[in-house]
Length: 350
Ligand code: IPM
Ligand code: MG
Image (tube, rainbow, N blue to C red; front, side):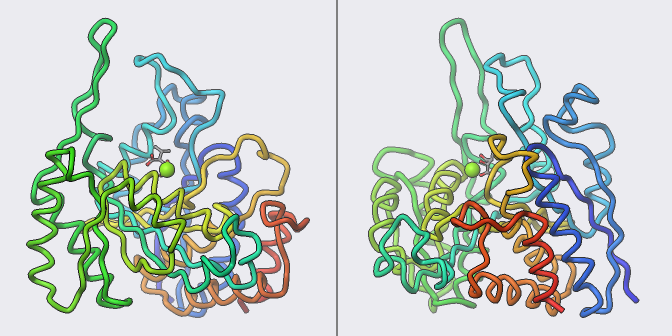
């Protein structure tokens, strides 16, 4: 039997609760691919600030780099919120991991479940048939540019190189080939120089993929189109900050951000998998968080990093089955607890 090493980073808030269910589920399906998972857990984020005075304790990056994949819950919470630039912040752990592991492409699929169309704030006829993938650039742009304060002035800079644009655009075009063959590149090329370079380089990548249709869209228009005609999108590729905002917006199409998984991938080394939602401090410790986003992230991990497609499919089918039967956690208007949802998914994934 094959052994794989997965680093678990439960993090803060509901992170440990949802990661716990995903772990049980992965262990439950791993025999389908003749595989055994060796788990190794580390503190990152706010809980690591409390214990080690830093969000990413020594050795955690190395442990992640030496693993086959990393599964993360969520980091952050009001306890560690600060506007003091000299204080550590939980999010620094996540940003350091993305940069340190070279995870430049963040994949966030959005495909509402028909049984949950009613849970979406959008009307069913608008969201019907939506099946889109946000490919967000994750290690460049304003998140990683030069920033600072000078007296009463503060600045953040957005820089991109052609190479940074090219490699994430290639992920988008390759993904589109396996889907409906359409890429929407989102930028602000009417204002930003970095967006004009973005557009130019995406055009070059498009020329190497004649079978994929490319359209460019300004980000303000994209924000509008996403809620007015979401089913027209296939693959959306965009820079870091626009992708952060648009992926939360796209998440609500499916009714709850508690359903959406994500995969962060790079050239080589392990991928990092995490739910799109945050640490949800308001419901922490109550056992009511929806573990589905993390379970679906684990399914992506099985497929993309662990060569375990049967387990991945079993988890995705189980989610479909259980939601289709009407079982719902509180975010979806039901009363099923986090742990009960884990049990239900395990029973449907055997
Ligand atoms: C996300 C989150 C992070 C981001 C935060 C926690 C730094 O919002 O993964 O979308 O902005 O990238
Ligand atoms: Mg975000």
